[in-house]
Image (cartoon, one colour):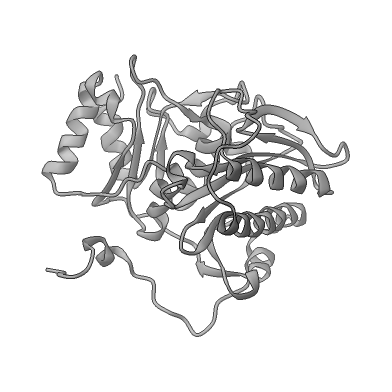
Length: 325
């Protein structure tokens, strides 16, 4: 069945519409806080600039290496990061910024309101292949700040995917909306109130080295294969989790083990995506207790965590098979 087309094309149900709501239409109707609307639009305006930079910049090693983790920074990483810092410094509503490239909180406007935390260009190891990469942004109000808060305290989060098209997921008051950057760099609502199904037939197994230490993870991956799930994994967190929203199903797993510890950053990566996943009816697991990633207290800017997220039944399966009781 389905000769000549990817099997997962059967999981795509988007139908063309005569017209699409604009970004302002959606935000005005589904995001009541004016300040949150403003910072969301500033993030998406910056994503347009990053899109344009990715189209014209060659993927080369940056002249200056500033990553405190020792990761090799590419020129496009630096360009994306600089654009986000420019956004913070020019914003009236952002008080503090923090980048995955140099994880310290920097005050950019003492009269601002929000702490904005980002991974400027996730997928550095695959961007030279011209594969999809992305930007993840979490936003916390000054009433909670970020340190000492949790992902549940975010007022919104935005994840942008740069592929053949540039699309973005935004956490609104009543759910998750996807926007597509269209003609004239105008954002249109391509999906509204996305719902992630409880069951999935797509899986994305990250950190497979951990399966050598964790028998439950080895068993889970074998379960997926034996039950003919479709493998969709690129090694980029943004495309690998983003498909849960476009296909409306999926599970991304990244457990931890003694020889392959968790590398995902809680504030920059896991918290922004977890808010979106749970707002869309999905589920998350911290990979250790089985509790929600949104309940992990952020105690350091560069804090790491294991994670599983996506379709609720599949995350439950991960908890049953992988998380030690």
